Amino acid sequence: MRRFNQLFLVLVAVAVSSAACSSSNPAGPTPGGSGATINGAIVSQGGSATKHSGTGGGSQTVPGLVVSVAGTNISSVVNSADEFSLRGVPSGSVELRFSAPSLNASLSLGAVQSAETVEIGVVISGSTVTLESQRRQHGNETELEGRVEGLPPTTPALTFIVAGRPVTTNASTQFSFHGDERATFADLAIGMRVHVKGQRNGDSLLATIVKIQNTRGENPVSLRGTIRDLSGTPAAFQFTLGEAPAVSGVIVTLVKGDANTEFGDDGRFADLANGKRVEVKGQLRNGFVYAQRIHFRDGDDDEGEEVEFDGLLTSIVGASPNLSLVVGGRTVKTNQVTKVYRRDMEVGLSALAVGQTLEVEGRRQTDGSILLKKIEIEGNDDDDEIRGTLTSKIGTSPLLTLVVGGHTVKTNGSTEVRRGAAHLDLSALAVGQTLEVEVRRLDDGSLLAREIHIVG
Image (tube, rainbow, N blue to C red; front, side):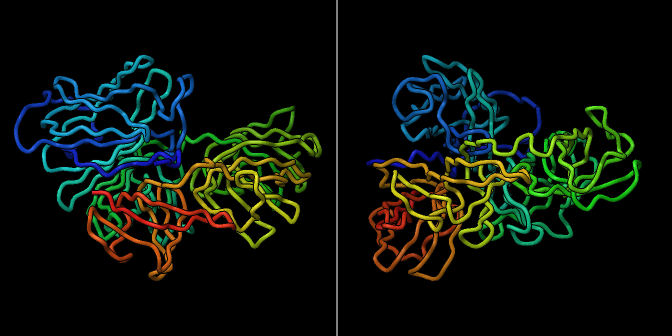
């Protein structure tokens, strides 16, 4: 059956130790117990779908790719959906090997034990395989490692998203940076890698420990914009950048500097003024960008520049036709002349939904913003099935809005739900399940679920 080319993470049963993020390397796998099952998927950096460059035809990331457990005869051929499954893995230190005519690489998962579970996504870049995200679970205890994908105000207070999973915190949650330096919830930022330990709490994870694995100083950024609300002295100053682009998916407009801030182009602090165009290079910190270097730019040096790129739509703000979108981490705008297409058919701004992959064309305005003239919602003409993890369920049965594998799908009274041969109702759906969804595309470009299969 034809499928969307959207890769997804699969919940897997795997044996892992509580030292999942350590660098220890205990003895290799030893037989015993019920063994473990390791299922996974090839994903792109940050978890979005991509294809491995330089490979031949077909829909696989790497044609002919086989994943095996070192020291055993356990192996799995990666299928056309970029998934693999390894069963009966013995406990001990596990090393996965990735073999293909164009690839020979390995990946260590550390120590594993029976009766635990893990969710993994791996990235293939050239001849290297790296672990992008993982979820480890034993009973009610869960460990989660990955990138921060959501923070308030797009999530509830004291809640953030890691590798597609909601994580809640409270006054008892212990935050720290790598090296055990104390941290707080406010130190979290989009794109940071974190290691979370906690317990399941419904569809979310209640965190007891959150360790930030990369520090704020490891988040370099570059911004352009027009200075507004300038205040302070050379020792401590700040301003906002009108229409600044998004940083790691978050719109950051506040810039702060001090006596260590450098000025390029023979500039100096006295040259800062409201209305001037600048480029700021610095570090992403808690809610602002610390300016390491500031360059002054001519007011119209990039006005009218044609801009074209593609990326994942992660935010929609405003009322049609005047929307502010975050696409591939960059902020863009629409107006009444912006055209939206899906498969060469004009569908309108109402067809846009978070999780879509867009190809956009526009022009830079005098204030530095990008106004779009064309948006193409990417997809395959033959798509009629989605398979992926259910990450959101909103509405009242039978009129639900689901997000499955990054795609927004609607249900109605005709939608059928099945698990194996059993017929269920929509109440059986729960966030975290892996679903196969047969869909029909409506005239407005939205997707209506005809039949939903709960996998596992």
